[in-house]
Length: 55
Image (cartoon, rainbow, N blue to C red; front, side):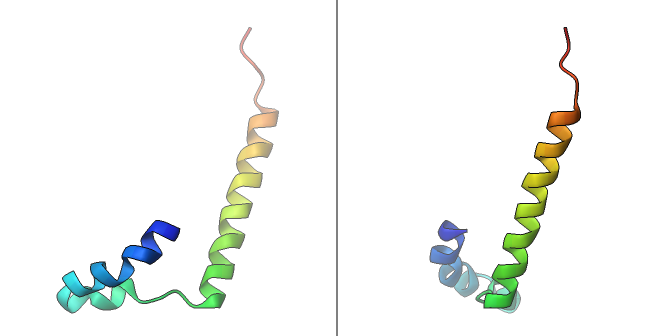
């Protein structure tokens, strides 16, 4: 995410009519994304723990 945020301005400048796709994320958007990523990691960990190891 840090790499994207540093390159965001350059990407927007080169995107023409699609520049709005590279708008700066809002604090609420960043919070939501962090929550989604946390749930993904927790879910992956829970699935991994339930998967039996092959002998």
